[in-house]
Image (cartoon, rainbow over all chains, first blue to last red; front, side, top):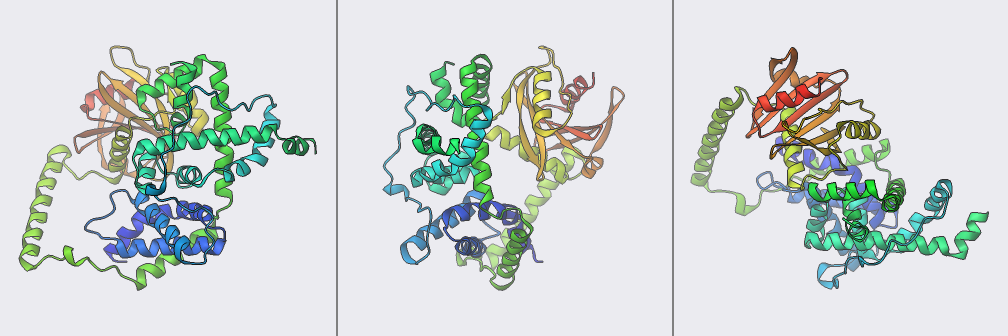
Length: 190
Length: 266
């Protein structure tokens, strides 16, 4: 294996699992997610320069992936599950109101709470708006820091911080709504 | 810090994105306020469940996913070589001068390295220093902020199953700031942070004897074997204790780090 190839693999191979996890959240179909990972790696390989080398390989790879998803959404028939919103199209999101308490989730036993989360967390997450879901996916499935997410989204770190706070707060609100809903009470009784 | 401020910082705290000072304030508030501690527990439970759900839907880490990935990488790298950008291709003279500059630079670096430690630093030392610098650059995020070595040792044991004994410092030596989990060379480890009179020191604890340690300079200190290396303005001091390796990193001289390590042997 030549030096260029081994240098490239040294950068990207440890991130393969994370790329796969995030791709599965961008794409509705498993085959599309596999194609997305492949296309990301191909573009990364073509752009890879041993002279310049990526300063932040993780942010670099996820930026490439995100741009492919935007291209796919605009020009192909691929079913994109999460459409990234370009920075210029976003109206800035205010951080969680600091005077509001967290949406209440107590009042259940530990076991009831675990069962409730098991049923509700994905539903609550899927109900979040795309910009919120995206920062959480990049953080949780991509294991990126706020700084790296800011590089991927091409926005200031402060924006990531406020969007993340809003996303986490909104997730709690949705979980609380779900805990109060008649549907949950019915499921809990069954 | 009051409850309202805690709500402002809790999410970033749990994401390890706060600096050391704020992390300590958040941790202190959580220790004193059962209501906020409960909120933090709920938030941790939500995170655990969400993380599990987001990873369940992928094949990450499975053998088939890994082999698919290796196949893709092999295909891409064997058939589609990247071309050096034209702008990066130098003319003959620029190439000659660049090569001379690179050789000269390498010689200078080599001399500096030899001057520091007498040999080129090994990968283990490089990793420890990179981790220390990363920790500093990220604002020294801690997952537990406490100056109590027993409390922090217990936390590390809970999080990693390492039975550790962290140095108990007196005020004249410095102060334990707290700890966080980390990885060294892809393996789980723990990092404890110390403020040694204004200078930061990290103490990384990891399982298994690392063969690279034996390439470091061996010194005896108060009847115990230690391994020392110096690189890029940093000092690394390591010792083996049972099944664990302890490695301290700082910009301080080795005697200060040896003193730190010795404190944990009492």
